[in-house]
Image (cartoon, one colour):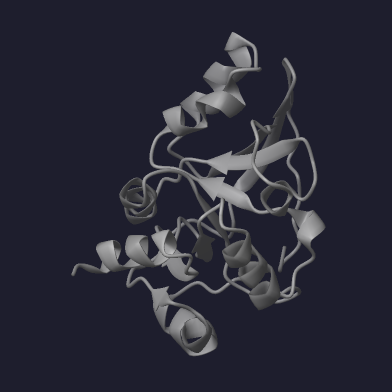
Length: 189
């Protein structure tokens, strides 16, 4: 079995895996599997109210989150994908472990072919949050992912980042207005 198939199968079976993204490595899980999400929070030593972000292979997989936005805001979101930009969008029904109890959800179509393929093989959006423990810098290579987390995960997907610097930029779009600010997230978030 190819590594991408192994990773997607692990996600489908409730597993937690590590994978490369644009700038850092991520922890991935099925956004509808509460046990897997709780496992990610425990691995990261992260509070549930922080929320987790989702990645998908195609923007149309976030159609329900984009639907409440006006046409101009939708266009701005869609024109940034695939890209190293995460948008905070209206929550169409993801659970509180994904949203942190908010009425919004963080979404991205990454500019990283392997990450998009992983979501595609899984069959929909997946949680993808930085691979690190709270307060520590995110891991940026396969060796670090294996060394620091490999024994605690179901699979570490061989790969490499796409060369971006750090986690994605986060912008917020809510209601019918776009707030043009960057949400800063300290290391470990």
